[in-house]
Structures are given as C-alpha cells and as structure tokens.
Length: 223
Image (cartoon, rainbow, N blue to C red; front, side, top):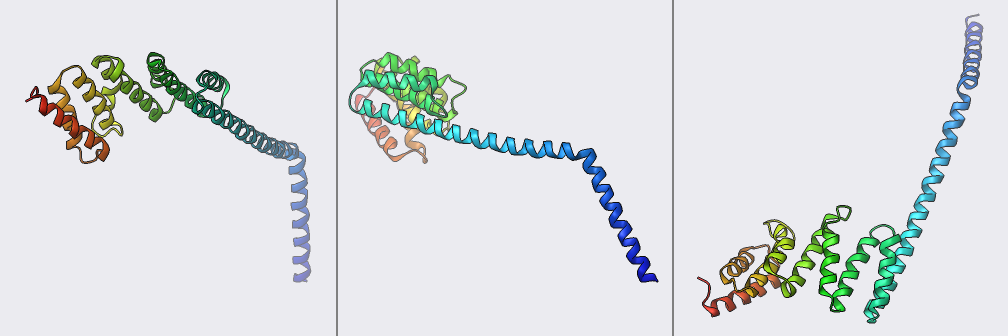
C-alpha cells in the first residue's frame, strides 16, 4: 500500500510540476522567446560588425600600402593625395598613420615647414595614441634642428627629455644638437653628457653624443 501511495504522490508531483511549467510558459514564454531572439540578433549584428570592421580595415591597409608604394617610387603628389583620402575615410589606426607618412613625404619633397606642421597636428591630437603623438613631436624636433631655433626644438622635445621617458635620449640629442648649432656649448655639453651618463641609453645614441662632446671639447668653449 505504501508503495502505491508513493507512486501516486510521485505522479501527482509530476503533474503539478507540469502544470507549473505550463503556467510559467504562458506567463513568460513570450519574454523568453524575445530574449532568445534578441540574443540571436545581437550575436548576428556583432558578427556583422566584426566582418565589416575587418573588411574596412583590410581595405584601408591595402590603400595605405598602395600609397607607400607611390611614395617609394617618388610619386609624391600622388602619394599625398592617396594618403589624404585615407586620413578622410580610413578606418582603425590608418588615418593617423597616413598623416604621419604624409609628413615624411612633405619632408622628402623639401617642404620642411609643411612636414613640421603635420607632425605638430598629430602631436596635439588627443585622439591619437600617446606613443604616436610623442613620435610625431620627436620627428618635428629633428626637422627643426636644421630649420628652426632652439626654442622651437624645445617646444617639441623638452617634454620628452625627462628621465625615464622612452624617447628621453633622442629628445636630449635633438636639444643638444640645436644648442650646439646656436653656439650654446655649455648647454649642449650638459645635454650630451646626460646621454652618455644614462646606462639605459641606446649605444648608437651614446656614440653620437660622445662624438659631440669631443667636438665641444675641441672648441674650448665649454668648461
């Protein structure tokens, strides 16, 4: 008898659970379907965006390589037009890369002022990665060593010359060269000595700094 009662209660329990499931589905079934559809649509949309983004980036990359080829062939005006188009509607990092390359093309054409201006624009662009902004400032500084004043070089490079910055010794080199060019041997010596004393400085930069220190010593114009 007890066994039959157990069977009966199990059957009743199963029926109750079945009724509860039916009631729950009647109450929440549409919501469940809606959530499921939303998940499917969301996943499809994300996959679609990933495909579009990858496809667009691939197209921008192909266009960038084509522009580099034009520049390497000396077709500077065509390269600049191609790079300007990428700056306008390229995707990912390609617009800022195109701008940086355009600056180097302007420099190759002999238009140092245009190159410096483009590098300054990148250096002041808060939307660009900090490493790219710093590199743009550094490139502008080295052009200005030949074409500008010490103050102009310092405006780009001084902030990069702080101890611990990845470009510190390159910045010191630009500042030192500019000071040397301006005839300020004491300041140039100090800057080149900072490079030589920095154990983490790249060997090629140290070698150039030592050559400049030897030249400064030969002038007898710095204590």
